[in-house]
Structures are given as structure tokens and as C-alpha cells.
Amino acid sequence: MLKQDNIDLVILDVGLPDINGFELCKQIRLFSDLPIIFLTARSDEIDRVVGLEIGADDYVTKPFSPREMLARVKIRLKRHLQPVNIEPQVQQVLIESTADFDFKCHGHSLGLTAIEYKVLAKLFNQPKQVFSREQLLNTCGVANDVGYERNIDSHIKTLRQKIKRKDHSLDVIKTKRGFGYFYEQTPS
Image 1 (cartoon, rainbow, N blue to C red):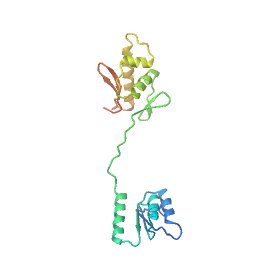
Image 2: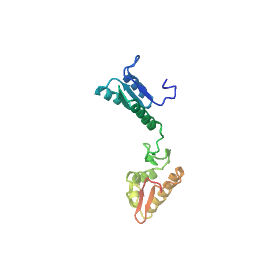
Image 3: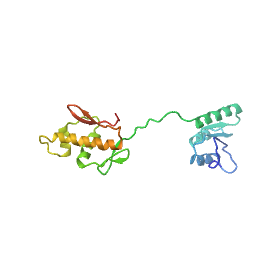
Image 4: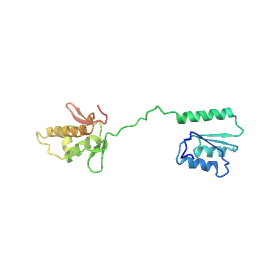
């Protein structure tokens, strides 16, 4: 019945004729987060603790006040049926490293060359750390002859273009004028 009908709240007794109320509560929790309130004559502390530990939201013992029971039902319904207005604070993964020597942006492969991968890996693995052109060249195993330093600028430009193809607003490789490049995971 719970799986087929639109039920908002369950009130259970521990001593049911066909099944133990605790067992029924466990079964309900396997597929539903409906509010469950035990209303029972079993008032021992161990029974109350077991009822709450197996998933009940409340445990009321007999004799009880109907007004108090109604108040408990209203509170559970209000909390369960009221939409949550708080947005979760989730850190979005913009760029992630993969096991096959590539990076993904929003889940899509960037298709990097070996040098591009080495440059991005160096920057990615040490975010906000500024690396000079020479340091990045050494990472790539490229000869550091005069004129090669500017080749890193070309690789950085290509990396930025590949990232922007996946997300136009994403600018994670930053330039520190006069010093070099660094990685920052936040969009600008």
C-alpha cells in the first residue's frame, strides 16, 4: 500500500497482529523516507531507543495526549512536506585529470598533446603556484635554448583555447606578469 498510494506519514504500533512494528519500520526505510511515528504501549527505554535507531522519527507512548500527538504529526508533516530552500554548497569540478594522460573539462576530454598534458599537469597539481617559462620547459623535457621560452606561451595559448571550447567562460590558466603562469580552478 505504501508503494502504491500517496501516503504522507505512518503511525505504527510495535505490537501489530501480522508483523512486528519494528520490522515493518525497517522494511519501510528500505524504500521510503516518510515520517514514521511509533504510538505504542511499550514504554521501556530500550524500545524507544530501538524504534528511533531503526528509523522512526518519533516515539510516543500510551497513554498519550491527543493534542500532543496532533502537534507531533503536524511538525513531522511540515518538515517532510515543506520544500527545502537551502541550496547545497557543491564545489563543481571544472577540470579533472584522467588516468589516460588527458584532462577532462565538464566531463569531456581536452585531447591534449604530450607537452600540453605535462604543462597542464604541472600547473594543475600545484594550484596557485607560479611557474616560470623555464620551469615549465624543464617539466616538458624540452631543450631550454634561447627562443624556446616563448614556445611555452604558444602551448599555454593552445591549452586555453581547448579549455574554452568546452566552457567559454572558463579561464583557469592565469598569467602573473613578469613571473609566469599558474592554475586557478575558479572561473573569472
